[in-house]
Figure 1 (cartoon, helix red, strand yellow):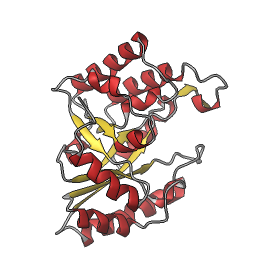
Figure 2: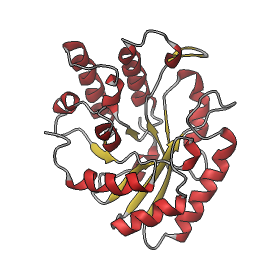
Figure 3: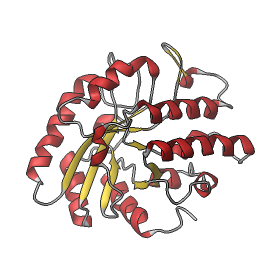
Figure 4: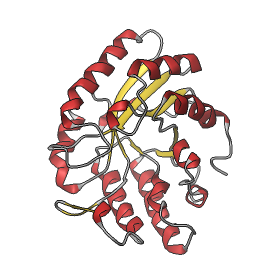
Length: 249
């Protein structure tokens, strides 16, 4: 069963969903206030921060350190209070599903101040302490990413599957195997009732797979995410998210 915090997510057309902060080490120096003020100027009703999740002992790069997590939550809690009359500020984390960290995910979903976790499967766990980013041959990486995505969908920890088509980022074409894997993810998301995210950053970076989205039936929940790593990307992505109709045929 999906975690009860899924109620934090809507598919409203006036929200800034999937926003990162400078803590992730690959974003701009724009402040949390800067993002929220920008969202207000855009007329958004909600801004959903989903910075890259830290892990105990900081085994992974390109994300906040574990020691920064309390400050991240505290800073955004202050924004919630400061802007409560003007915009809904949601506090989340984007994370991979790694089976060895189940106990940690349990702590996160119960953590005071966190509204949601979203599943962004950038790599997967090959075995304890061995991860796919260390593999020399990544040609079939998408198969392991798909299996991890399915596990994550069924774990009950996550409220949204971020950029599900990005598991094919190393594939230049499209084939029956990719289509079959896509259908598994789509069917499981439909069964569980978890939204799939059409990701503006994937489109900008040419990681978007229209073939995946052509397989998604109307009854599957969809949310459009900006995946902003700067205020400039927030502004550009908001417009593309809510006024461009070419994301999905």
